[in-house]
Image (tube, rainbow, N blue to C red; front, side, top):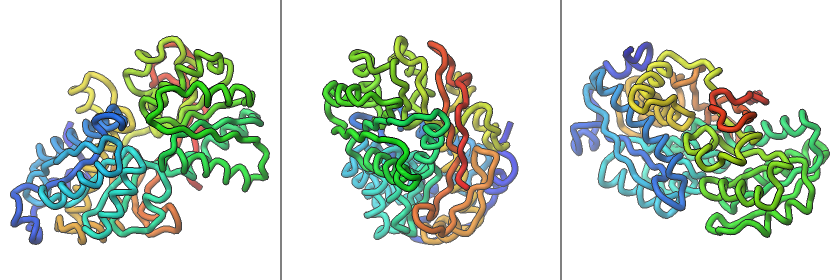
Amino acid sequence: MGIRGILLAAVLATASWSAPWTAQAQDIGVGLIVPLSAPGDPTGGQLIRRGAEIGVDMINAQGGVLGKKLQLFVQDSQGKPEAGVAAYRRLVSENKVVAVPGFFHSSVAIAVNEVAKDMGVPTLAVQASASDITAKHYDIAFRTHAIDPVRVSTWMEFIKQKGFKRVSIIAETTDYGIGLADETLAQNKAAGGGVEIQKVMFDRTVTDLTPQLLQIKAFKPDLVINIGVGQPLDLIMDQATTIGLLPATPMLISYDAPTRPQYWQLHEKNGAGIYFIAYYSPKSKLSDIGADFAKAYREKYKEDPVYGALNGFGAIAILSQAMKAANSADPKTLIKTLEGGTYKSWPDAPVTFPKADGVYWHNWVPPVLILQMTQPKQDWKDAEVVVTYSKK
């Protein structure tokens, strides 16, 4: 099944595009900055990369964009801000890319945007949630992901539904962890402070979190919110099990790590019962191009796509449509077109990037879910949907 609708029109359109980009390459270069090695989350990065690569292949199979092929240039951020900045500079200066999607770690996206605002090539964060990525209102910064206030509102609704009164947060000292922890405290205060919240922070490079987890156990919480990313997330689960905190106390993971194939390999004995934030469920309806992508993904990888791959594909689809609408791949023109247009991505909902107030600037927010693994070795597609939250 080929790409239909708006995306098909975008990829079949032909036009010239302005210097210096045509002078530098026959193809239209698009960058991708994702973590592919430690201390970043390489699985998260690889899933985004898969989606972007298939998106490029699908578009090129239909003739490319503006009469040219798309070429994807991939850079490893390692989850480090300085590596992300160096990657962005290489992509713009050497590869002459017209846009740079990707970004899994918020700290990387924030650091890159400080450079991008001067270099002028837009970024599109697909899985980084810290407020400052868009709250600074840089014209180059775009995002298609759940931001801190929406993610926190989702678990505050969950806490309210469950009647939890004591909640412990264990969070890494990154922009992601600090932002979510502080936003939780702020929303709780705004709601009257009805929940007693314990905040415990840790450096993501540590290998023993037993002292922090014993501190949490002594607090006797009704819920533990695990705001670790990659290896720290797994470490929290395993060491919480060792000291008897898990499964006696419910745990909520702050993103969709349990949807990954290795989840049950790592947590065969302690993965059941876990709640987790997600942005997609097979019960969610896909757009026509989303369904086409899912089919292509299954054919290539023999498994269903998860959110990271879907959003990686979505970034390529959106950028190709914007180039067609602009009749140009010039980055400055692309920025203006992204701001004023409506685009099609993997979900069955229009995507826009309004000049909105605060953190919602240039930001499209997917619905946020809380799912639960109710049985050992459960397929994530069968996980129970506990909460569905959409920004009002």
